[in-house]
Image (cartoon, rainbow over all chains, first blue to last red; front, top):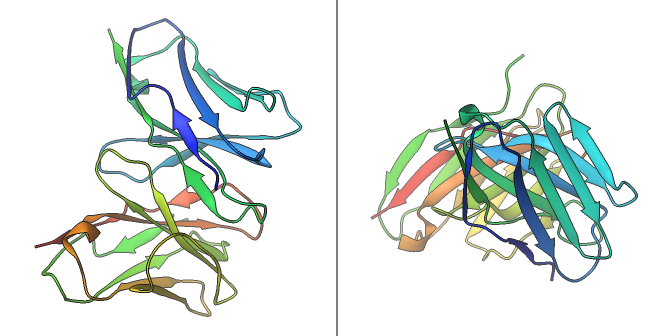
Length: 113
Length: 112
């Protein structure tokens, strides 16, 4: 079965710097990979989706890369702000039907002023 | 436009009891997925409903069952509750094969 590993449980960086979060997966290559943001006590909020035939996707200060050779996705937040502090979750399709979604355990990002 | 709503927000039950959680999807969405999230973990996929049928199921026992109604709303039922069932239960809706999911605020279930 598909497994996901988000390398850091927690990441602390200075405001204004670029935060880089890592998501690695095993087994087959997913058709797509998603990133979500979750604040304490709230449901996850969708941020970006990148498909297997896309290498990079951007949305405002966010950038996601997808390397199917390394089986890895990187999630970048540029010009980070304290308001970006949250847990970020990586998710991908859990099997070939693509309707079963598997989440990583998340990386807790803290941006200090 | 209302997003995904879930009820109740909090629930306390004792071992052995049964619980029903409810979810209304975002307007225009026809697919509902349920997740269990333990503290400090990512959401774990329970099952997905589409056209009133269970389309996919995660590694959860038969004590976990669900239903989707003609208006696309959904229920999650858990029988014979165990202490380990204590978690945040999240409902997410999407449209057809669209992969972007919209999550509700969740129901916090505590089993004593």
